[in-house]
Image (cartoon, rainbow, N blue to C red; front, top):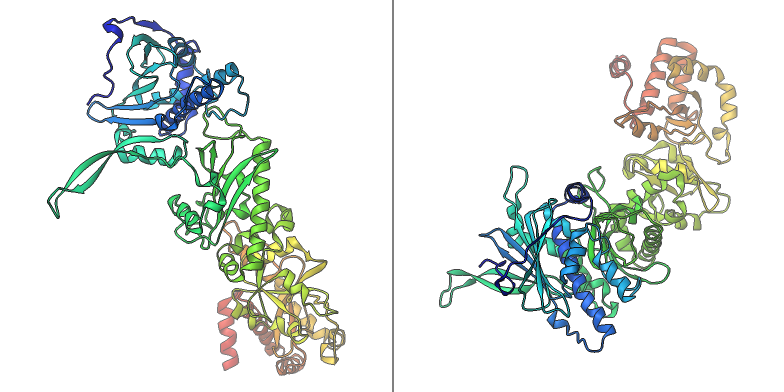
Length: 640
């Protein structure tokens, strides 16, 4: 059936050829080729205009008692004639008179919605979508010819407006049985670059409607084809066509929270393809006042496969009055909360002319700040009330929180410092900084940490011996960002962070073995000779007060630790920053006694043992041997 076949008014053609009143060709070309990013947007714009037309009837009914508004009589309809390449969008709204067709469609960027508000003194509270009056022209992105047949409210006459683009348009009397508007698109033929056939496919049109216009408040009807069993058959199917409403109309975020069950939120999460997991928690937010918005946010349990890659795109779905404006609006989420999924709907946003992107305004920033605070509060609540689920969440997204601490020079510390966790040497599980600080014994000066590749590796680190012997808890840093984040944080509740590999542990020496000054004086010449042998590989060689059972280890002075050096050296743009390493020797160990003997009696063997001890320290810290051939030869010399 050809869906554009209405009869001419009284069989007489009164055709008027007119030019666009704007800067005609160039401006229309700009509308079609530059303003809109995706061609599919045209359907969103036409449906939004149709919704506006029905809204106008509603507002008319509010001010005129003679007008009745039965919502069941108002709808939007999509019809497709694939054979003739025709797509029609119809509505039962207020329609347009001949003058309104001329004014609203003949002047590019003139908004009929704004004029309607002004004429009816409805003010800013009037909830009509259209603002700029350019959305209609997006139809020319997919259509060679656009025809509008409309009959205005209160008029017995209908008119037909038609255009093939910037050259102009025609208006003629036409026939339409009821008030409302039909927009008829003659879809373009396919090209090598563009497949316009998709805008004649039922599944594609339904997909566009569900994505952008699912929450338009009026029913959007389509004829939908389904397979069904033939009557009397158990295996043979036939096509069955029926009219269906393809949009949801009432969005979940506009419903009362008391009406919704947890399953409703989970279904919404799945329907919107926010993730394949089950979210740990949802937030249903309704804010009214200086800035107003509705939002549903989800905190996932598992990270998407590409979360920690450059390809991952953060952002929340952004709606304005129920119409999808941006699929992912990055400005609504800080990077450290980029794992949050969901949507925001606000009537107060300042949109740009294409209604695709936001103008950066105060309103958006206020919403983003409010969302950030609510996410933080929700995470703190989960940590306090549902520790098991928080730890699941933290295994997936804890690194992102720590990146947030490190970025922007620690500006986000107040937001994030109570959300991060580290494995504890005492508790043997994840603990917060607040939990660590709350059980620090009197006299402990620092919050101690050890950095390494894994908890198992850190357990064996010789640098932890003295701190562990004092009974102090050690936090294990196994993520590449951990130590960098803590360097930015510097302290927590007034307690400075201190690495177990630091040159100064802030622990008083106990006994002769732990008196490095005495050992330094007695073995000053030996240490100096070792430093000369190792040359610029180490900053210093000294007696250790941290070692109890191991013969040797590396410590560091300065801001760059050994673990940080390893991470920096693995970066693509290696900055070649090195830790100032100190070789520490356990002067109470039997190996040191042997070293002293060789220092006094066998210079060659002393050189050999010095290199072996240094390479042993490198291996303990997971650093590469600088000269593997030399190391192999030294081992052979010892064996011989």
